[in-house]
Structure formats: C-alpha cells, structure tokens
Length: 512
Image (cartoon, rainbow, N blue to C red; front, side):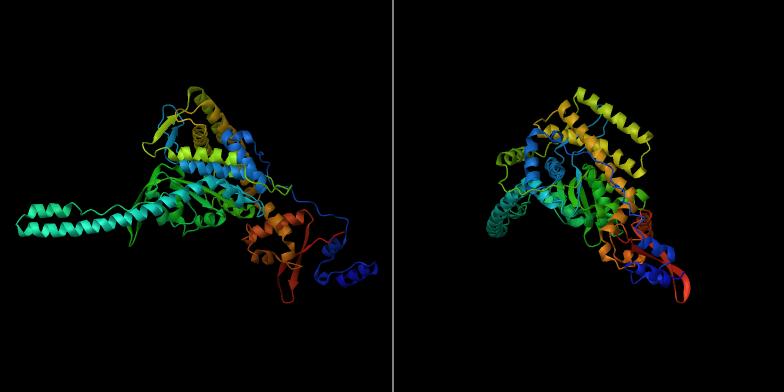
C-alpha cells in the first residue's frame, strides 16, 4: 500500500495528515498516527543527593545561612558552601593541620566549591549575599589603601625636598674636599619609599600573570569568585589554558609555589600559591566538562578539585519574602570573619587532631579509602573521592577556628567535618552520575527545546544548535536513540532523489 493511499484512509476517519507524511515509510507513519503506543517518560537520571542539614554548620553561621536562603528563595546549600569557601580564603595559610600524628602530610584549609543549579536557581544572589562580609572587608581595605596612597604621595614629595637639600649639602662638602661626608649625605635619602600595597580578598577575572602578582602581594591567599564558573572551566580545558591550568592545580593545595617565564616579562616566582575558589554553573554546562574527566579526554584532576560541589534538588516552592536581613545573624558571621582576619599571617600555625578526634578521623579515613580501592566506583569519581580526606581535614580545622579554637582540633568540629563527607559524597555521586549518563541529559535537553527544531529534523539539525553536551554527532545520536527507545520520537530513513546513503530523520510522536 502506498503512503498516499494510506494517508487517504486516515483522512477518511478525519485524522490530520502532516505535510511530511509522503516521505515517511508505512510503519513510521502508522506509529506517528497511532495512539496505541504512548510516549514513556525519560528516567529521572540524577542519583539522589542528601538534603541540607543546619547541623552541618557551626552555630554562629546557621541563622545567617537560613536567613539568606529564605530571603532569596534559594537552597541553603548554595549559601553555606559559598560562605565556607569565603571563610577558608580569610584563613588562608595562617593555619594548617597535620591529619596524621607522625607524618609530614600538611593541609592548608583553603577550599574549592561549585554550586550547580538551573538558571533560575538563584545561584548568583546566594553567592553575593554569602560573600558580602568579605566584600565589606575589601571595601574597608580599599579605603585604607586610598589613605595610604595619599600619605605615600606626601612622603615622597617630602623625600624629594630632602634629597634636594642633601644634594646642596653634598656639593658644599665636596668643595671642602669632604667626599666621604658628601657621599653619606646623599646616601641618607637614596632609598625610595616602598609603595603601599592594597590588601585583597577577592578576584573575579585575572590573567595568570596578574593573579601571580596579586598572590605575591597577598601571600596569605585569595578567593577566586566567578558568577559563572562554566567559562573559566571551559578555558582551563583548552590548549591555550594549559599554563593557567597547571598554575591553578598548584593553587589547590595552598602550600606550594610556582614559576612562570615570559618573553619580555622575564621570570616571575610566586612563592605563595594559595587560592580558594567558588562559582556557580548550570547542569548542562558542567556535564560536558565532567564527561571529559569521565572519558579520560581531560583527566588532569581539575574538576575533581571542586570538592565542595553541591547540586541540590530544584526548589519548586516559592513565596514572596519581603523583610530586612537578620542583623544579629549577619553581625555574628562578620564577627567570626573579622576575628579570623585579624589573626596575624605570621607566624603560621600548624595544629593536629586531639587524640579522640584523631581516632575518629582515622576510622573514617580507613573506611573511606578501603571503599574506594575495593568498591565498584568509576575511575573519575574515584579520583574525586581520593582528594576528599584533604578536604575533610581542612574543614575540621575551619570549623574549629570558627568555634574559636586555635589549638588542636577537637571531637566536635571533626565529627561535623565527617558529616560533610557523607553529604559531599552524595552530591559527587550526582555530579559524576549525570556525566556518566550523558545521553540521558542530552535527551532531556533536546526534549525541552523541541520547539527550536524543525519537523521533521535530522541529527545535524540538533548538532548545529551547539547545545551543551551535544557538541558531537555521536552525542546527538546517542540522545536521539534514547528518545526513540522511549517512544518520544519516531525515526525513519529517507533516500534522496539521486539515491546514495539514506538520511535519518525524526518526528515527535503525535499527541493522542
């Protein structure tokens, strides 16, 4: 039976025939017009992740996080992670911890975090509010710097006058054949005044070279805060970003140094590579980057260093909240940060766990490493989890400092850090699970944006859109196959008028 005749039969029962019906094979048109086979929903795809628990934070921070999350209507996870990363940047290299009692493994508590959510998940407002105490610190230091520059300018003018007077005095001494005295008169004012340096806390967008200069001026460390982390991560994954990637990888540990050589700028030695990092990103943008780690295409450990990565469930509920911020909660957080900021950078202090806390950490550490080595874990996720003991030791130290401790890390902050281990592990499972199930993520994206595709459409139509995670024909075909398996689209082949290889086309299954 020809398609035209078949189409006439359907018209006889008042079924609308699409304009592309003439090119569809009999079975494909039957599938399209029939309501017998219903589309099946795609799997959820994302592994479950632990919800936020206020007990994960020291008491002094909890009300602030809840207040911001309530007023901005965002997940508290976003505020908490951004705040902890910000505090870690203030502490920087002032304190470090030996996670073992008889080993020289030393951990600086700077943290790298990433908050993942849809464009409407309020990531940016959450970050901005969480980092406001640091922004205020920087504003205060900027004002001090302006005053210092004014004083430096006045002192430099005075030095110029003193040099002029010393030159006149030296000339007279030289006439009297008092050469040594003349030289001493000039030497007294020979040194230039050191220019004041501005204390920085946050950088948003800087070249590797400039960031190196800023770290030399701020050896305790800095916070790299990116409103959209996707662009930075994508740049780091390119060949042009290779040098920058190596530099940032070194900055993760917080205790190393770095040397880069440039024609025209010579050799620059960065003694203190300590950088904390926080940024937001959409699921569709993080997936291909993690996929590079999963496939081994870009497996240098950059993504795995985003240890404080959280991807909470979407907030579906919303309500209008119009009230002033909780002043007491904000002041308590600011007091904590001010106290840590006022702690001298030198001498740097190194602490260990108290005996009971060490035992608790050792038990978790042993169980964690055995699970990684013996469990059925994807290598990319395994690499992520291998870095977690460093993160947990650093968090235990941070929680101890936030609580006011300056000596050995006790049982309470250690137990809280181990609670973070379970929480972060569940979110890491979601992150890498999404990348491993990349075809599912691509299928969901194509389904969400079906209106942007022609009908019928080809795989290359989808490829040309350049959607995140669908940058290759193989990725597109895998996602389309999944949609076809769930009867969401119908695929068929068309042979051109001149023959040759048939081309694949798809239509969306007709609604019943």
